[in-house]
Length: 307
Length: 255
Figure 1 (cartoon, each protein chain N blue to C red):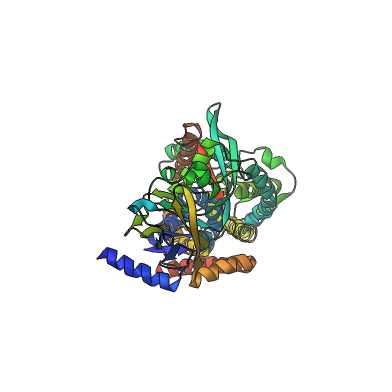
Figure 2: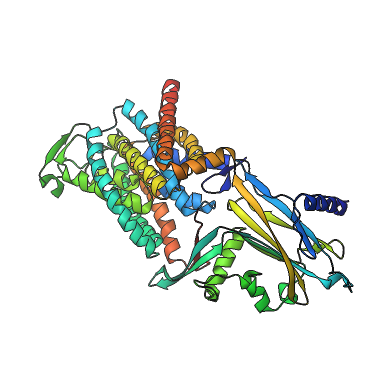
């Protein structure tokens, strides 16, 4: 069944898009990632103009994150205080990110920058997580030991001023690292067109040393706002948000997210980190191959049709 | 049978939207296309008759040549970039910008364009891919490799087509062809122009307009996104948040 998209100006298969939304929603509910890094390339592969693909995933990320965050909240797995600190950094960062994105796009190097940052971030984060979680899985043959914390380990982070107590996260740390982390995520979310969950989740586990159980919900909480902010930004500046496409993705996404949350609960913390690491590394390898493999067609064409 | 149907269709439409000139009459089977939510592309027949001028005697079937061009009023700007290896990775280095290229372009003729007229005549009317202006200024063409990459990409997207031999004569004077409008055809006006050639020169031409417009919900959403983007975004967010809450609530009870 085909339906015509008013902004993308082309028809798509309804079931394919709903299914895609569901798959991405599942990952979102399970790992706390928005899933934009999978959704955007897939939509472009279907022939949807890149500007529309990047812009339209934002409302979908909002919907599946709301779906997931409510379920996590009902179980007390959201640290609103931590989420708020991350968010304030994130909104500031996304304003700076717009400047950077426009500069890169004019130079024609936005794609390269995006691919390189993906490869670097996914590769290093995924590699570290894989190594750590494999250790943890091997160590623990019995009760869940899943926080990823090393007892008594105090890094330089704990020496910083402005200490705040985050009850849910069981942390007493300076507000500076989460604020800076939020800032970085904000910049990346605009430049790379993603919610930034895949960087945020590992950073909360390993850098801030939060409990894995509250990490996913807290990440989703801030992704909701980043997604809403970029929906408005894209709709007002580029007018490239397609409501019909978004509606189809949302329909699949909110249901997929529910299954993701339930599936994620049954996973032990170390296994959850291991599977996220594998997912990140898979995407890293795919993008890395694209960068170094000689392209079948060295030319790329982008056409803009003014309304 | 089909031929007769086409003739009847042709004649009736000529009566509906006649565009006469001294010797060339042309018509289109539809002059308005509405894009609704079930739009998956369509076809439009373009036909007409070319009569010899008074007193002239047609010697043979191929006394006339016909070239049909359909191009969008909407001009697009394209950027073609070429990747080159820099160390181990492939990076966009060289690029060319093509300005004021049509968002949709279709050309059909009764035989090879090169056999119909000389290159300078074809270039004058921008007939055929090789004579389409793609430069930053009139008369200045984009570099060949970049230009070809652009034409290939547009053809792959079904937005550009060139069919030499697709105009068929049903009698010495009656001709017809069909233009396929793909699902991603840009909304707006398409200008349909029929050129009659004789001995390599344009003897007459006729232009018609084909309106393509969104209708119903498609039109409503498109207009809203342009006129009230903030409201559009907010309404979409309300739907998104509502759907998220509804799913969470539904699954909570089921659990």
